[in-house]
Amino acid sequence: MTVETTSVRDLIRSRRTIFAFKPDPVPADLVEDLLEAAIWAPNHHFTEPWRFILVGEQTKRTLAESYRQIQLEKATAKDPDGAAECGEKGFQKLMSKPTIVVVSCVQDGDEQRRREDYAATCCAMQNVQLAAWETGVGVQWSTGALTRKAETYQLLDIDAETEYIIGFFYMGYAEKVPRTRRRPLDECLRRTA
Ligand SMILES: Cc1cc2nc3c(=O)[nH]c(=O)nc-3n(C[C@H](O)[C@H](O)[C@H](O)COP(=O)(O)O)c2cc1C
Image (cartoon, rainbow, N blue to C red; front, side, top):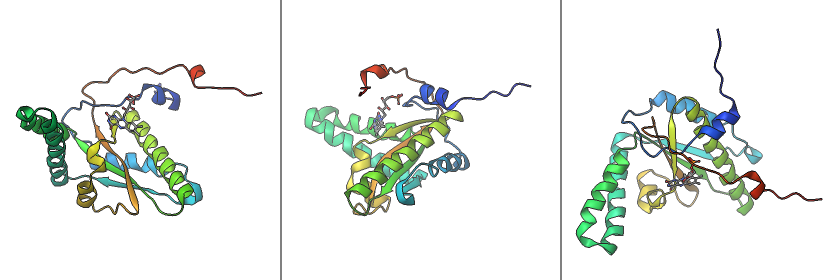
């Protein structure tokens, strides 16, 4: 019997940001299993700064309404006639994300501590993205306007003084896997004597 294994390198290379999902949500126990990969990320002084919120249907709908408002306001400035339609598109776009996880990090201590905790939480987030990809779950990491809105912090009961939303994870099963490219390493690497 051959057991198929995927190397970490293969996962790193093949993972793509997923924008279009099939409607099925990711089962909650699988989401929790994927988030378990997060907590093994490196973190200085064992601050374990990451925090996660698995968003329920009612909250998702409220977020979608909030996104409608963002899109409505953006569109109104350009083309008031088409604004309502843009708002509706925004609402539907958010509703089409099967599963939403909000990722934040605790921000206390001095500037260095804050930077380290932000970096550690980003490491945790990539752990989740790779663990998800391994199980066939696609993720989009979003830092869109909705993630930064004061109303979002209120809705999610996050104190912006002490916690920072790094992003939303939109998760689900990919309808389409985009192609992407990278510059060769040599363009990013310098060697010293
Ligand atoms: C910190 C961070 C923030 C991101 N924010 C967004 C976002 O707001 N909207 C979006 O469409 N993609 C966002 N992305 C995903 C990137 O657009 C994506 O990683 C990039 O296009 C490369 O594609 P790939 O992940 O498939 O390699 C974000 C990624 C990172 C790491």
